[in-house]
Length: 330
Image 1 (tube, helix red, strand yellow):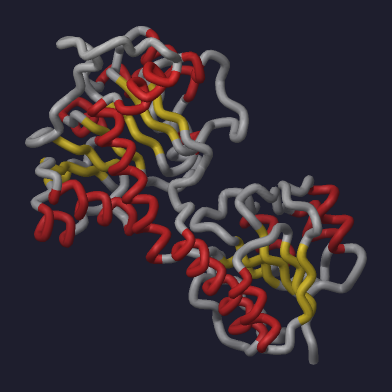
Image 2 (cartoon, rainbow, N blue to C red):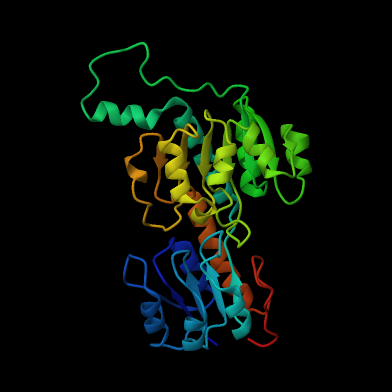
C-alpha cells in the first residue's frame, strides 16, 4: 500500500529518491521559504498524509497533530528537534526522528574552528576595514590578534560535535577542558582534555568557550550576564548549538563593555531576528545558521530522514527515533 509523505521545504534529492524507490508518494512544498504553521496545516489537510519531513524552522505541536491525525511520523531534517513539542507528539502517538549525521558533526566542528581562528586573528574586522576603503597602508598596531597556541579551549558539551572540535583543537596546539553532565573518556584519553563538573570553572579558565549543548529548559540562557562576567576579558565565546542557550542581550552588553573580547554566533536567540545593536559591534562574527551547511553533510542528513521513514513503515524502529514512540500497527 502506497504511503504519502509531505516535505515542508526542498531538501537534497536523495531523500526523495529513497522514498520513491520504496513506493512512497512524495509532495514537496512549492515555496522555497519557511512555512507558517497555518500553511503546514493547510497542506496536510489536502491529502491524507502518512508522514512528514519537517525542518528545524517548522513549529510542530498539537495544533498540527490535531489537524493531521493520519500522520504517524515526523522526520526532522536537523540534529536538533526543539521545534517539535515532544509531549504533544506523545499525546497523539506520533513518532519523531531527527538526523544526527556524522558528517554534520564534522561540518559544525570545522565551522567552530574557523570562527575561532577568525576571531583570534580579527579577520572579519580587517576584511570590513579594507572593503570600506579605510586601508591606506601597513601599520604596526593594526588589528593585533590573539595567539591561540597553548591557550585553553573550554567545551561546554562533549558529545559528537564537542569531540570533533577537540580533535581539531588538539592539532592546533590548544589545551582542552570541558564540562558536561558526565565525563567523556575518549576526550580525556585521546585529546588530553581536563574535565570539570562545574561550568564556572571552565568559564573562568578558558580563553575560548565553545557551546555544544541541546536546547532544554535547563540550558536556556545557560550563558547569561552572571556567567559572562566570569570569563576572562581576553576570552571569546562561540555558539553553534542553539540560540537561546545564550542571553543575547547580556552578550551584546558584555561585548560593548569589553567584559569579553569577542564572540561568534551561528545561531540566535530570536532567530532569524537579532537583538538590537548586535550587528553594530565590530567584535562579533555573525553567520546565518550555516555551521552544518556542507553539501556532503546535508545529503547524509537527507539519507537519514528518508531511510528512517522507510524503516518506520516497514515495521522497524527508526534508527534515530527521539521520543521512543513506535506503534504496533502502522
